Length: 55
Image (cartoon, rainbow, N blue to C red; front, side, top):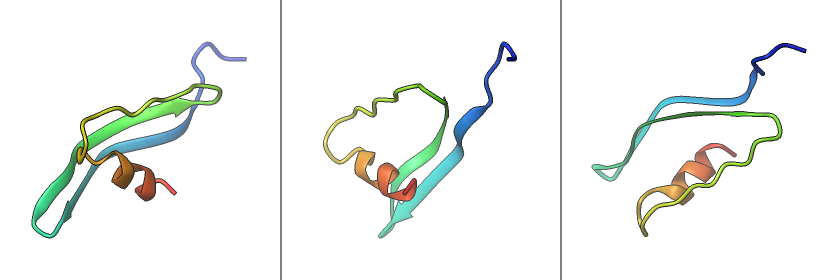
């Protein structure tokens, strides 16, 4: 077993514009197996859009 696990999911530089409005701008993160990720932000910040894009 190596000391550094391989990412299970990697997102790099994700941006999306809808109707001329920038919804997500340069989002990057990675998750390793067994990790838990929480997504927080104000209403309308793009949390649901991010989850829909990762389905």
